[in-house]
Image 1 (tube, rainbow, N blue to C red):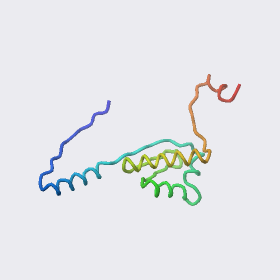
Image 2: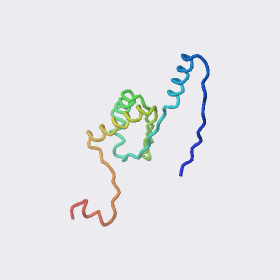
Image 3: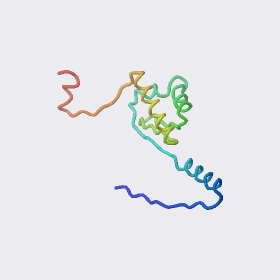
Image 4: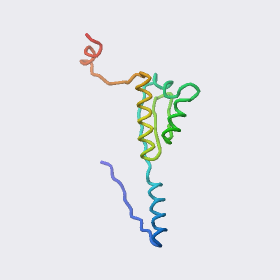
Amino acid sequence: CVSTLQRRARSLGRAAAVAAAQQALDAVLDVDEHERIVPLQAIPVILGKGGSNIKRLRQESGASFDLDRTTGRLRVQGSKAMVSKGCELLDALLESSGAAVEMRVTQRQGPLVIGR
């Protein structure tokens, strides 16, 4: 169970000033983060030659990408729309490159996967 503390803010003033304050608060509070573990063999694909792929992901989505090359932990941060677009672009990149996807299988499922 996750508990969250909620507080209320009240803006008083002229209608235009209150609307501007509401818009500023909406922009500040619109944050998101997505974290996943990518297979280590997918890291060169994500980075690209000279960092070209990760730069493109950052530019096209506006999100920040933080990739730990030793663990494969990838964190995407930004506004909700930026993170969503960044994850969408990342998935498309991995899919188009044929990068491996790791799945956990039980010992009983192993023969089914390899065709025995």
